[in-house]
Length: 445
Image 1 (spheres, rainbow, N blue to C red):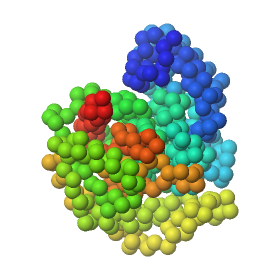
Image 2 (image 1 turned 30 degrees about the vertical axis):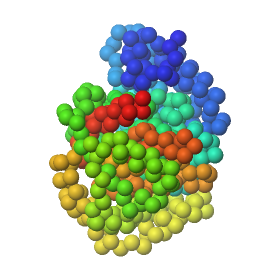
Image 3 (image 1 turned 180 degrees about the vertical axis):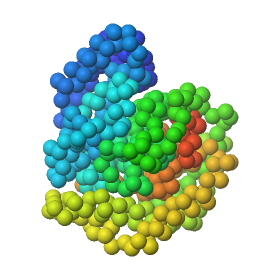
Image 4 (image 1 turned 90 degrees about the vertical axis):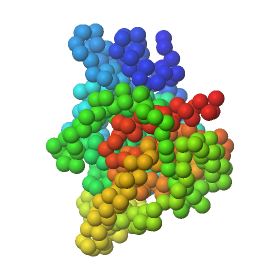
C-alpha cells in the first residue's frame, strides 16, 4: 500500500482517481495517525472514524460506477468548527454553542461535497474564533501554542492527520497558525470564498482560507471553493478554474518583491530576525527592503474598531444571555465594541477603501510584498495564541496572503514568510508563491 504521508495532496488525488489507492485505505492511514498523535495534539473537536469510513466506502463505490468524478473525489478534508455542517455539531469553541447543530451545510461544505470530498471531522477553534485558546497544542512542541484562531486546522496538517483543511481569518488566524505549525496557509482575496453558513465575526473582515503541505496543494483546494454565492453578497464572479495550472507555471519572468520589516520588527526574537535577514540576503537580487507607508500606522486602530463593533453586534445574544460563559477577552472586546460611535465606524470603513487605493500602485512594479508571518516561532505556553500584528494590515485591505514554511527559528522550530499580493490577482499571486517555495528549497539544498 502507498505511504500517503510522503505524497503531495495533488499526487494523492491522482492516485485516488486512478484507483491505485482507495478512499477507505487513505482514511484508515489517517485514522492510525490520529489514534497515535491526537492525545497530545488535541486538534479535533469532532471526529467519528466509523462515519468517516462509511463515507469513504461510498466514495469508492461511486468511483467504480464510471460516473464523472469531482476534483477532490474520495479525499478526506478537515473543517474548522465555526463552519456549519448538518451531520456534525458546530460548537465554535464555546460552551454557549455546546452540542448545537447546524440547520444545513455551509456553502463551502456544499462545494466540497460537489467535488467528491469527504468532511472527516471538525477542528478546534479558539472561543468564537477570537483570542481565548482552545485545547490544541503545537505538533512540533506540545508545550507551545499552535496559534489561533484556526488552531486545529493548522495542527492537523502539521501532524499529518489530514491532507487539507479549512480555516478562517479576521485578523491573523490563518497566517499565524501556519507559521507556528510549519504548513502552508492561504487566505484568498476578500470576496472569493463564501462565508454563508459560517459563524460570523465581522462581515467586512472575515475571510475563509485553506491549509496544506504545498502551494500547489492549496491551489488545487481553493479553486473548488471559489464561487459566487447569492447568500453572501460580498462574493464575486471569479474565474478560478485555471488556478492550479497558473500556479504550476509560475511568473513569466523572475519576480521582484518588497520586504517590510515594519515597525514591529523589534518584537521579533533575535534568532528569528537572523533567519529573516538570511532570507533577504539569499534573495537580494529579487528583494528591496523598504519602510512601510506612514498611513499604515492608522490601520490597526481602524481594524480594531470594525472588528469589535461587528463582534458586539453579532455576539450580542450570547453576551446578554450567557455572559458568564464567555471569556474575559471576549466580554471586554464586546463591551469596547458597544462604545464606538457610528462616525468612528464609518471612518474605519472609509479608510479601508482609501488605504487600498493609495497602496495598489505598488503591485504595478512588484510581484508581491514580503513580511514575517509572525513575531517569531510559536511562543511557549498555551494561554495565548500569539500576536497577529504582521497580518492586520493585509486582512484589513482584503489582499491575498500566504504563509510559506521556508525558515526555521530557535530550537529548529518552523518560521513562516508571508507573501501578499494585489486584490483579486490570486491566480498570478499563487504562481509567484510557488516560485518562491521552489526556489527557497533549491537554496536549502
